[in-house]
Image (tube, rainbow, N blue to C red; front, side, top):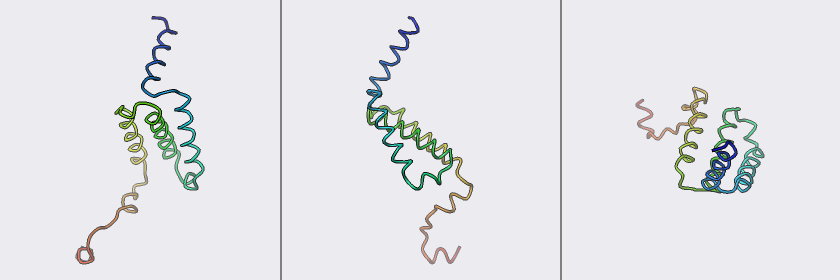
Length: 108
């Protein structure tokens, strides 16, 4: 098989899995424009921004292609985990809700 044939085969396989690339691009760029337009975007680190952008790409693949392709869902988890693992060490304390009763807190 020639390189051109391999490429054509790969593109055909991706198209059947992820849908038309034009649709995918439109969905992803709309998601990214929405994220970037929010005030909170400027507070994000490069890692957080990149994670969200790749997640948006995976969401685009889900919306334009096969929503039951588990790899996309798995990748979303992975990119979220990469960002989570790079949060400041005090993150857990800032964002943990203490569900103990007042009596339990007093006894701690």
